[in-house]
Image (cartoon, rainbow, N blue to C red; front, side, top):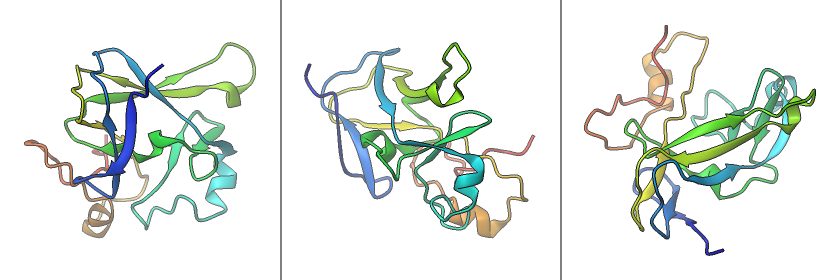
Length: 155
């Protein structure tokens, strides 16, 4: 099976992931891989600090987070966008093991070879979205309707 994606430098931010072949709307592109860690384990170390604006953590469910700092793949380099061409979908498993759940990145529209893959990170923070936090979590996607931050509006 030919490789669909490649990580390389991005004009959005640092590294990004780019399509090597045409990807059709609805196509599953890649699984977001990494070590399963509990929220408590993640909170106890510095691999996902709110103050850094940089994380390879993906909330899987109420028990686990996927930490792509450990055993991660190219999916960890997919950048955020306010006008994404992909979405992250949690696939819940049947059974009693929440660590068996998975996250897949799927195309929400057709993607051309050479195009950068993006999805909306959906970052929610309990604390107030101060100008300082908005700057830390600044969005650089360049979309026409860019919100300027990766933080989701408070509800």
